[in-house]
Length: 195
Image (cartoon, rainbow, N blue to C red; front, top):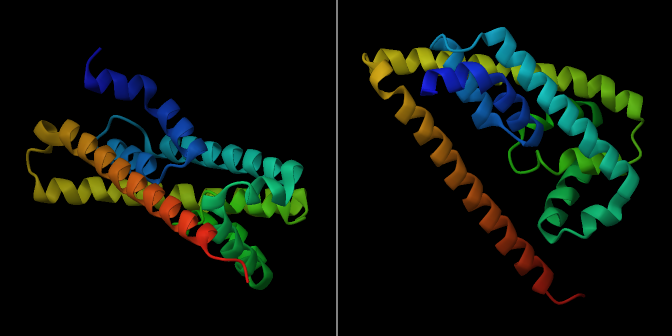
């Protein structure tokens, strides 16, 4: 099976799983592939919408069942969860609608929201709106990113596999850097003497 067949057969599933876990990069690449004609943009957006919605609903219920202890047992999440709780006090609706756009707290927010006592029905309604907004915005961004690439690289067909691999590699390096930084920050925070 060649590269193009892999994309057309498994592209939507990869987008669904990637966005279930956490996946701006996956969705941008999905939009780029839609621009290139391997995938259909409406299905890319639908897959991303479903993945992020179901993922964040699951994380919300884990936070709801396990509570604040679950969050506190993860040192890397502690500073982020404090930030989310502060935002939650002032901007509950905007936070639920837009947390996917806030790098650094995106992963922990559904767990915090679940542990905060927010009504599941309220969260579901706002989460549907936020997931749809995010999937459309990032998917369309990826689509136009593909168009911009074509302006700069006239023979994009020759390089598209390497562009995709480079984007995935770059996002993995950035993700690893932030994980390392968060872990270092959490260790530093936990080593401070209690006053």
